[in-house]
Length: 119
Image (cartoon, rainbow, N blue to C red; front, side):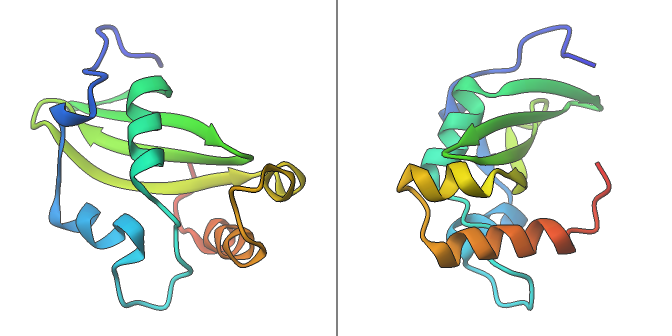
């Protein structure tokens, strides 16, 4: 369901949670493949992504970057970015884009394949 009121579209309206800070630019030490989440993706999701309300102030922003589609999860009531992750990838478009390396494409594919979220 789409949001009934538009969430703020300025990236500065949101501050990162600790969880998000650990995921941003792959700054975490676990056995999951890197998300390759960066500032361009965060800004692009907020500024241009499709916004879907999940209730309780939570909004999902969804945008595609050179064949890789990302979801950014924010809490508009608290003004926080909760998390962000890839949800799909068109491997051919990603390869042809020049944005992603072969290793990054494989990381994203592995992340999506092992992500426990069913949404």
